[in-house]
Image 1 (cartoon, rainbow over the protein chains, first blue to last red):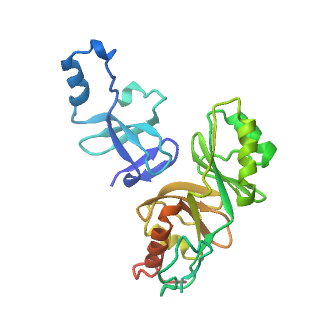
Image 2 (tube, rainbow over the protein chains, first blue to last red):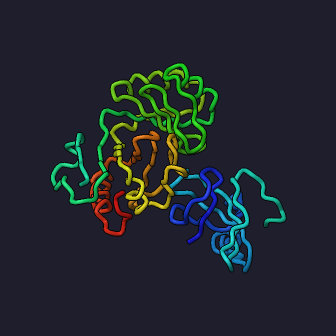
Image 3 (tube, helix red, strand yellow):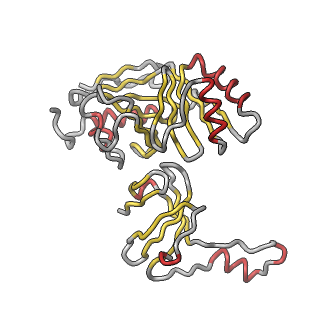
Length: 93
Length: 197
């Protein structure tokens, strides 16, 4: 089980959280000018790298805030967690 | 024996309320409380409104501030739960709404939505920890601490109201109250728990 440090609540166990996918994920727009390929890219294509990724997590059973986690997809090691409004040091990404 | 009092008679009507369980644990449903959910990004305005009507200060994250019959629980960075006597909830809601009229804020009466169960006794933390991932020992969950977490597969706000006597209050959705009652009764009698001191 992962132990994730929520920026608001501190370390909590994984069942309290919900995974929210990779960040940054920028919605293309305006909609009428976006091609089908670009929409498909936005909706379905993910980098899925081996190693550290930036992800969104929701502390669903705690403070209900979304935040950013830098997690290794190989070892599950968590390097950092920050609020969505904070910028993450480049070295951690 | 786990003793059980039920002031919320309609809530948990029927079923056996006497449990064969281990000693030193008492479960009481606290009645007569009202709850206001306060949401606002304008902390200073909310602080002023609370100070003039209840004398409360906004608590630090994961803590509770209390004054007289009032308690204010931190829930999220912009959200607090005000516990007050049920008879005052309506007038407090009106007063806070009036004072917060010029800022973005919500003052919501949650009194009928929530139920509070107080588990007391030296082993109450052991029973609760069999269904929740927080460490509820007195040194890591001291008096004045509150945390929203999952308990017995339902969302719950846990609150340690005092150093002595040892007790933990569980604030849950009212519709989950009977489930919590049944789950606590099972958990209190679970043979895997540490023996009573």
